[in-house]
Length: 488
Image: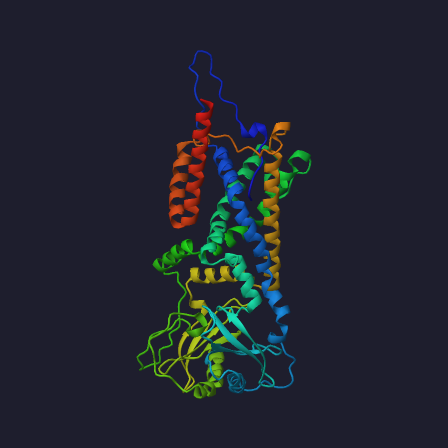
């Protein structure tokens, strides 16, 4: 949620009247969190909501990008089965013949009938995390086309372009700050919006408060905007919190702190070792498929020999339990095993991995998804959900609905702000007024001190959020000083 309207009686509480015979007293501090929550929700909504709006618009497109990819690139991804599947070695040999100057790094066998096999090469002319894939008809072992694939999910150019639009608007690493700002503030704005809405509902003294939290009250025309704003915000709140958390893990500065915290708590994703028994070689976390740091140089091997070993490797991996769509990382030199790892695909909930000695077909190391730490599993599922891949089209439709709901909430928030503007003739272009100052003075120290401490910790952990919050405070203080000097 972004902005929450206030009626005049809610925005400006009347000061306490002095009792006869007593000295006049200032406003009494209370445990009421409403003024503080309203002011923070208002300012964050005004200044941060545009970034969240951009993230929501691009996120709506990102949510359905897997399906768009299937439609646009159908000629590469799907073929009409014309017979039994040819040996994997034959398929890769045909693809390698079209790219003799490039090095084979991975193979993603056709997972089921009608899907193509991806034969992936390292192309030095491509960018970071980009590889060239030749798509092969598994029934005829004939290439049907080629395209650049991106990342561990193997996104094709359209999905990769949409992903970069959502992440940085194609303006470079610096503009990834926009998405980090949106992800860092989203959960705070939404949470304080929920606090404001709960307080409003409780003031109604309705018998069914829980129902009023979810159902907008349409009985009063003047309050329909705020009621729809809040109700839709409550509907999408759980998904917003998940998207905010997973978005932060991908961010530049907050994401680095998340990674460090996961390492300290042993929540990192485990890895399967590519080291062959009796051979001195560095372990690898996922071979070429994960784009990990290169291992120490090893003596090169004959690519033809590696291709001949692929069927044996794939059969051994499937016998070991890697039965979902997988990618086989081809070792860069001797002394290293093939790594077979399940791909992040729609409807796939596990990522099992094994290492296989290509010369013997012996499985040298295994890593079942069931053995991952629980936090690593939750992180993987959360990221897959954010990408629209956790449970297929239903996942994508849910994300699309939430993105549209968030856009609605933000637009209604700005509409409420516009309606709060002065209506006198000489104030036609004035904006809505901010909630009254003094929220901290009217709030109990038992509330403000823990909140300030929490803000300091969160601001340190999420630097973009912390610096922007500090900017809000400085701006607010500067406005207060200016008005004091003007009125004195």
